Image 1: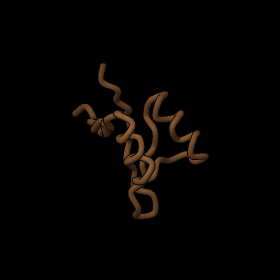
Image 2: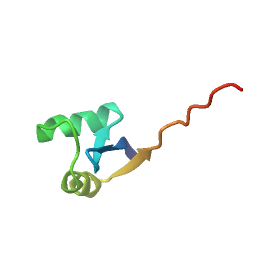
Image 3: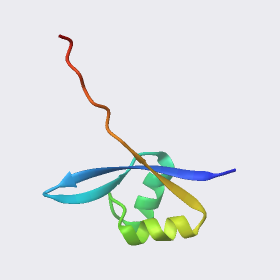
Image 4: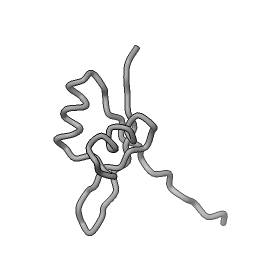
Length: 64
């Protein structure tokens, strides 16, 4: 069984910030006491056997 957490990356004031996008990722963020995950936290999460999947935002299209 492969353990994967999902995150989303957003640009906040020109800086890329990683937000949890699934319940397990949210729990890891809560453990760190933050709303986001740092690159160090992601390295530790991966060392625990989790893989990190980055969600891409859907492109909104208007009907012509």
